[in-house]
Image (cartoon, rainbow, N blue to C red; front, side, top):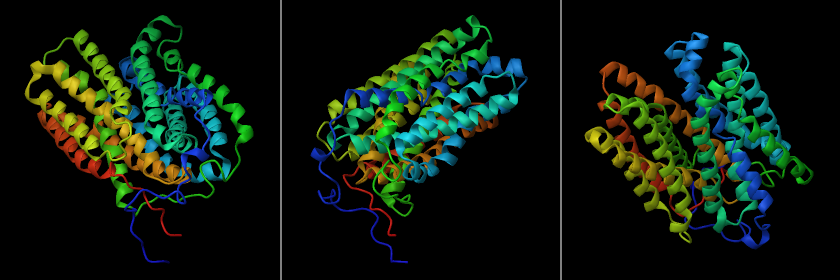
Length: 413
């Protein structure tokens, strides 16, 4: 085995290491539509579960602990599945694998909606595994088909679509459960409309896909020994932890502080709108800037400030949600962009994305569960919110490292 070499290069790769942008195809409208349709499937099947959980627990007899497991199961599945994607993509081709994942997602969604607790959990695992493939494949496909100076813009666009459909799912799942036959079972399956649309759009691209070229000429192993890759992974994990924890517990925190249920609903909606606005504006504000250390660190500090305000000044809920929305919106775009920008090829992007999302979602899965335990033990939200502020400050440190204008060096073979 050769001796280990430095994990990152000190300069951006030369033209020999990374083909110039002029060699890549122009970004077509069809490709952008296809990317956006895939993005529409990455959270739609997950965010609606929270609003339906009381009805699911009441109808199926699940305890709160089992309901919490149902919410955490997708993140654990993401962590377990993500490392498998890069090798599978090299073997079968990225477009083929994506189409297969979309088909699996549709099947898993249908299984989850069947009137059986076993099917509820089994379908959740199947659809979550399919979503994990989409999560990892998108950065690699973007790295392969999009010029470097447009990567962050395309990433911001698909994050915006992902956020819009996630918010839509949160908002309409409960009304659908009340108005459609089959109650929450039917409401859990409405997102298959996006899945079928994405499947149809990506199906013709199979003609141009071939094994071994889906994400690059060669398969790239995960860069587990790279400090930069770990910084990207931990940044992905900490921002995901903040987002999923806020979505899971923000309503309970606000209710505990005296807000009524209507206000809680609007605050959750407001938080997501601000996050979407921030993610959409980021490419315009950072255009032409490859070094994003201070952007990542600053956005993380804003998230920490949001949790601190939520803890120390309950009357300033709007301020807290504004800060949380601004910070998490920026951090999400950066976390996904880094998986494409910190590598020299599409194959390396798939490897880095697999590592970042495996580590990231494992970290994120601990968030909602840990905060729930801390709240049960202490009887208040003081310690949980203080911990979130501390973790967000730590995110500033790893974000500063992940944002440096360098590339992960592939592991020595």
